[in-house]
Length: 173
Image (cartoon, rainbow, N blue to C red; front, side, top):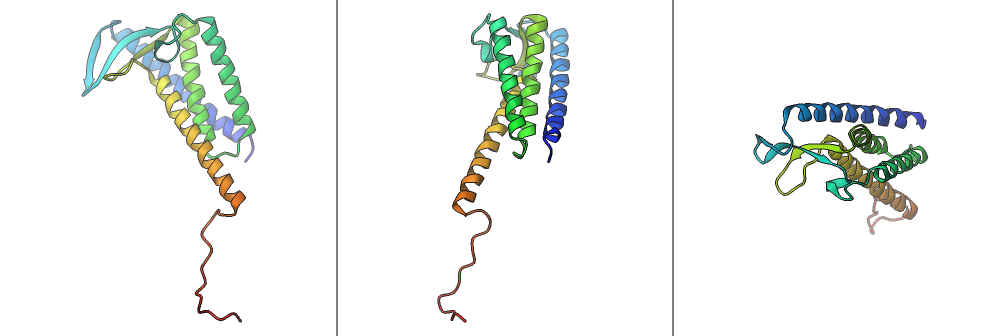
């Protein structure tokens, strides 16, 4: 597999995440009054809030610093993917993380804050970009742990099916 394949697939996933994220934020911004709550389904509600910090409003007002740190993280993620194109599923994790980060970065640059609108009980408001980042980080972690386990098994010679046991009563020929 060439290094270009995973980058292309990650780019397509990232583009889809960015489109869904930006469209959903646009619909939420135009259809929900800031601070109001719209009952949707069971415990799921919609609200409109503006987050000028990082995840869950931490480091509010970070502005240029948050944008700079986001850019550094995206560059590091790109370098990691470029150095490990053989890892299974890494392109999906990277595409989700990259798309989510860029979706929120677009808001920060364009609006000065991130638009959040999905609300669950006991949880701060979030958006589709946040969901993509979270799922991407879980997939990335799973991929790294799975790959690391496979490497350790190969090093110990335990990869693949267990060797067939011989009956102790067999006579060697």
